[in-house]
Image (cartoon, rainbow, N blue to C red; front, side, top):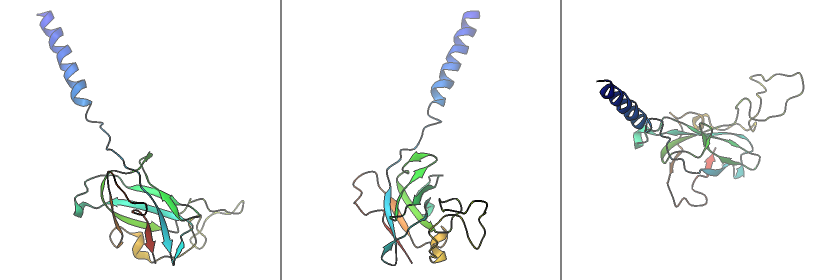
Length: 154
């Protein structure tokens, strides 16, 4: 009887370890980099966010984000990992994002009138919300063109 119980317990533990191995499986991420343009010039700061577009079949639960640098370039990360899963995304752009690397005088704090970071350029507010943005992008598994993830805002 003891041998049977030990065997059963060992089998059950082994099965649970094997079955649980797939539970923490991470999605495959694909690189996404691009340039954000505003009035025919690179946007010099802000944040790009890719939000999964469920209406186009993207069931991912995570957003990809990338800071826009002084040359208008961004590269996405998702939950601390480079890239983002393949699929369709709604794309938002924000230029008044606190904590985006803007310089502040010592002893000063950000306010609504003088937010910390961002480009200081005002863009149309529709680009800031997944519900109103006209921007969509499909992240592909291979064969992305050189400017596939470039964005133009007004």
